[in-house]
Image (spheres, rainbow, N blue to C red):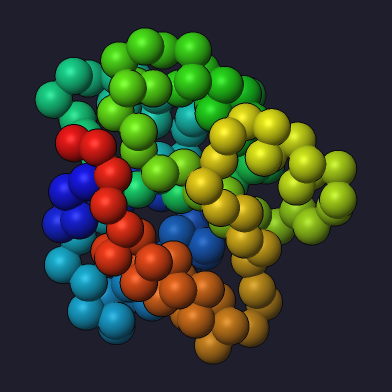
Length: 138
C-alpha cells in the first residue's frame, strides 16, 4: 500500500466535501484529496490502470449509482479488485441493515458521519492512523 498516494472521497454533498477537506488539511496529511460527486465518474477514474489510490472513502447515499453499487462494480472488475484498495463508507446511514449489507460487500470500514465537527475530525484521524500503519499488497 502506498500510504502517500491520493485519497478518493466520493460524496455528492459540497458541505461534507468542504468539511472533510478542512479537517484533512488541518491535520496536516500530505495525501492529495480527489473528490467525486458522481459514482460513475469515480469508477471511470479508478478503472484507469495507472490509478492506485491509498483509500476510497464513499458515502452510500449517492444519486444514480449508490455506494453499494459502486462497491459491487469495483469487486467485479478484476483489475480494480486486484488492487486491494481499502474501501470505507463514511455515511449518514446508521441502520443495522445498512451495516450488514455494506459488510457483505467486503468493505474495510463503516463509519457514520457526525454532526459534531470534533467527532467527525476524530473519525477521519482514526481512519488515517489505522491505514497509514497497515500493510497491504502493492
